[in-house]
Amino acid sequence: DGEAGKMTLFDESRRQRGLMVYIVQFRTLLYKQLLVSGRNWKGTVGQVVAPIIVVLMLLLYQFAANTVLLTKTVTPSSESLGGIPKCTPHPGSSSICFLISQK
Image 1: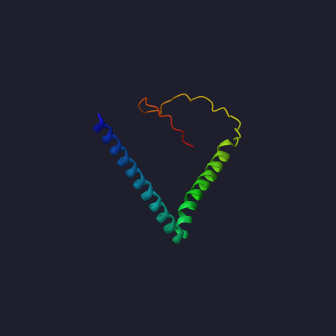
Image 2: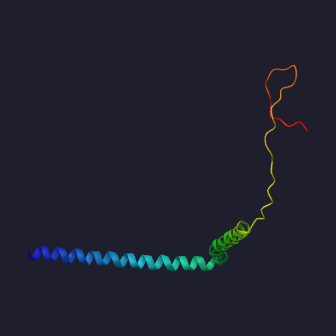
């Protein structure tokens, strides 16, 4: 029973040591990334500003589309088209009629 407790304590200290190594590596890499970002500040600003510009352009496009789509269209007055004229075949031809207006 005593050895099982020692193994648990050993495993726990090993796990804590692994967690500390992970935290130190994370902080070191974060610091390195901040240094690189600071050195290349124009690229960093571009990476931050470019998506904002794209979103603003899409919002403006959506606003323009909504403005066009929400405008009321004037409906013209309707006109009577009349009926279909009676089919009278041409003299001397078969009884086939075409509904084509020849103006």
